[in-house]
Image 1 (cartoon, rainbow, N blue to C red):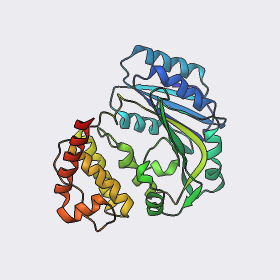
Image 2: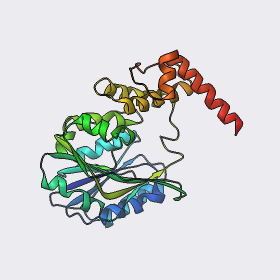
Image 3: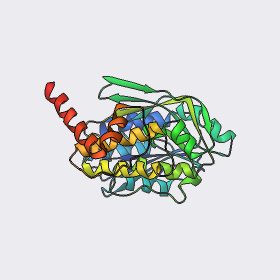
Image 4: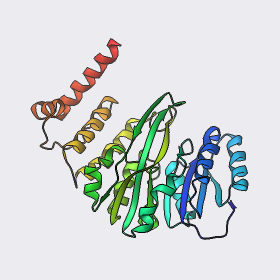
Length: 305
């Protein structure tokens, strides 16, 4: 383990690493050059198999100020993040994926509300999704707004569509009793509602920008039936507490994906929302029939290409 600083930290940035030597330096330098004083960078090497990754991590830990580097046996993203949380000393905590990076001054732009108002416990900022070498990009620009409840943030902000950890800065105290679930993908959706419920206020801002690179070999692209089932379970847990039509439609689409993957277990409760073709079919023929019709339709579309 490498420690390269002795002063108290304001912001802890946790970066889990697994065989991402090609992008890690870009990621780390984009954080080191953010312009926020007293920022610590915590790299958790989750058992990378590529020796170049280990070498790069050690070099960065030596050359980048205020950086912690620790290696662990391969245990997954959640375990790496939890390890980082145990090491973090900052008043605020955020996460960055090692194949992503931030626009200059992002943290400098998004942190003032947290410093100004002690009741704001989380700030979410905009992001751009990229596939491969910037071939396809989609900008998700948020507006500046403050929310006084979990329900308002989740439903009005449609947070269920961007329930990521990496475009948010949290006040440290919300992690006192919350950790990421081990051996489970889509862990962000499982953890974020629990964190948001502990926040007194939350905020979205149009300032800053996170560059997310979609990885065709990553977890999302290789999601299994079990992974999607976990995702749906996490969303249903929230749906049982708060709901509106748009959120229900999102959950319904996950149920359809799960059914198409081969798991014919019907998890989603049928709620009295109407106004779309899928919802109309749901109420006319039931959830199972909708799932079968959707699977047949997708097969026909795929066969016609």
